[in-house]
Amino acid sequence: MIRIAGLTRRQWAALALVLGLAVAFLLPMVVTDYRSFQFTLVIIYAIALMGLNLLTGYNGQISIGHGAFYAIGAYTAAIMMDRWEIAYYWTLPAAGVVCLVSGFLFGLPALRLEGLYLALATFALAVATPQILKYFDSWTGGVQGIVLFKPDPPFGLPLSQDQWLYYFSLAIALVMFWAAWNLIHSRIGRAIVAIRDHPIAAQTMGINAPLYKSMTFGVSALYTGVAGALGAIVVQFVAPDSFSVFLSISFLVGAVVGGLASFTGAIYGGLFVVFIPNISEEISQAAPWAIYGAFLLVFMYVMPSGIAGFLRRIGAWIARRNAS
Amino acid sequence: MPAATVSEREESQAMATPERTRTAAPLLKVEGITVRFGGIVALDGVSFDVESGLVAGLIGPNGAGKTTLFNCLSRLYKANEGDILIDGRSIVGSTPHAMPGFGIGRTFQNLALFQTMTVLENVMVGCHSRTRADFLGSALRLPWIRSEESRAREDAIEMISFLGLDDVAHVTVASLPFGTRKKVELARALAGKPRLLLLDEPAGGMNHDAVEELIALIHDIRERLGITVLVLEHHMNLVMRVSDKVIALDFGRKIADGTPDEVRSDPEVIRAYLGKDA
Image 1 (cartoon, one colour):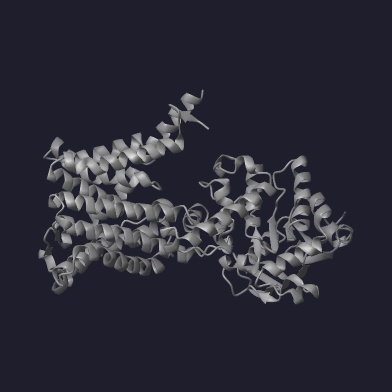
Image 2 (cartoon, one colour; image 1 turned 45 degrees about the vertical axis):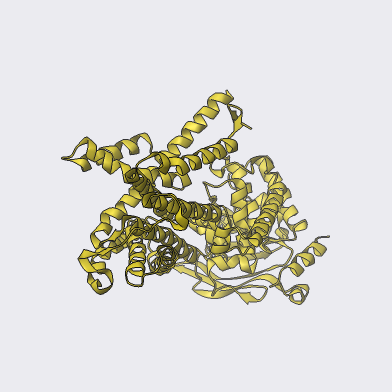
């Protein structure tokens, strides 16, 4: 067993998890409400990226249409809260189920397409979504969108609204990451990865590849949809143009930069998606997207397997140095 | 001794019909399989049986249609005509992923492992068809899922030990040497507890010692695990030594079918391998 500073790899991972949770828990106590709001968005994007990661990272199916599921989740929450005055927390399971079903149904025909062709089919979904939302304006409020109210913390907890939403999102994220971890480390997860690694061998082992691919698409959409519902609650506003193709591409960027087929990768990806555009704007007001592009190039050159893969390699390097 | 293991295995398999097997009906029955690719006839009305408990060898020069036949048996290719029966049930209308349900397991000529997974994980995928865990139960890690998972893990570890892979159980397969990876594939196929194991050129790329080991292993698979084996192989020495019966193909047709000695001395087989003048 290789040890670094007396701890095994597993112990280091446990330590990192405990420290990460402690930081996540204490964060809203030490930063402003606006920063809490930003970190809430990081958590929400991390859930969405975890969903995309299940599909693209673990199952090997590229989607540049996950913004559509984020939008469906967001509108499910917004319509339930605004039209039917349903409590915000009930909107999450509803958004999850709606996206699971729509993801599965979209997946059934689309996953007969391979690689880039699937990517184009999902792109079509991303392009169509904002306009479909505008078309059904009696439900969606059309171009104006729907304005929501921020929920107060329950049980008279001494928290600001932003702090409460942070903890609420964190709790949801922990449950969903736990479930995804279980799923990936099970018979189902092995089948999902087997299809990515060798589809023909996977079928010969008795794996119903079309069914598993569609189900993975559905579960992936469920994660992104729940994130969308949380996003609507936290941002207190949904409008068609918040869910453009750019959102879908940001998700793919976040998933790749964070690290595909990695749980921590989804968190790094969330940080990238939220903060890099802000930092770019601070560097240059005139051409923030040029700066963003430069950041992206640097990340891809320095960390071709994403931030998670980069950190893993540093860990392996330290372990080797210690071993010799 | 092997007979006892065979009947034990079949009692434990719900779909097996013991009466049928006891009356020595063939486990595998291939009936007039014809496969055409455009204008080329890859298989032309090939028929043969493999009785339960045998090791059968499938030989023939390059292009004889052996691999095409194997791919028909695992439903990767569709036959234009003919039928394939396992224990009297036709597999021709079923999907490739239904084959383990019929008791068919296979290995591949050019390794088809899951590269990013460890040896244990690869072999556990082999247990897929015998386990039932679903998406929701797995995500929530329900108690029955956990007990099924640990049973699958034990079964996989048993197969890993059977093939002497204990030392590399937790190593990612991509970093293993070729010969070891071939064994992983075999362990993965065996983890599905097949009744009929299809071996696609198991000796390909092996040296003399490894071939000797493989011969012993194929005997073990039949004797200790009670599995019927159909082996497609170029290595003539191996086929003749492990097989109870040999089927020879040439240009998509069956040219001989019998004991190794019969097939070895069959004039058509000699002609196919050595040319007309030999």
